[in-house]
Length: 215
Image (cartoon, rainbow, N blue to C red; front, side, top):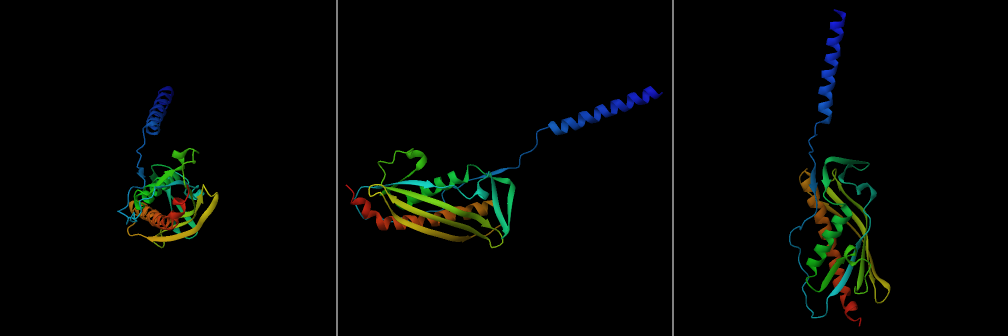
């Protein structure tokens, strides 16, 4: 009798362990959603009023803030705490997404008389470029308490032929948004980049004759 009870107990433990093992080894559902920047609206283009050759700009976006350099989207629910989403993820590194979005938006704004080439494509061969456009992002996050996206950066233009910095500009913006979803947040972040691109494009247009004078 004792042996029978012992066998029953051992069989019970065995089947319980099998059930536990199956639940652990079974594939878990992944609820992740992936986001990236696309084309936001149609920014107003700067008219091309000259027949001069196009200016070639080499674009470099520096490292994004360390708190945002991760696969998951980070937000700020209040001014002293950050939240890392468990399901909302970037489809590409945020630095690459910013580079791609700014390249597209500045090129679109400047029509065909300014050609923007990301540094990854230039691969160090900058002898054919007129300017180096460097963008250092110090803050880029959604402030949920204020319902605004914070973008703080410094960007500069270096003239390759003259071997000097021709412009250094500090830029900061607060872009409001509606809604509570990550779609709303990512759209607002893209709009913030679009406004930065407009600021850069306007100032490049102001100094473009300087590049045209280079033989």
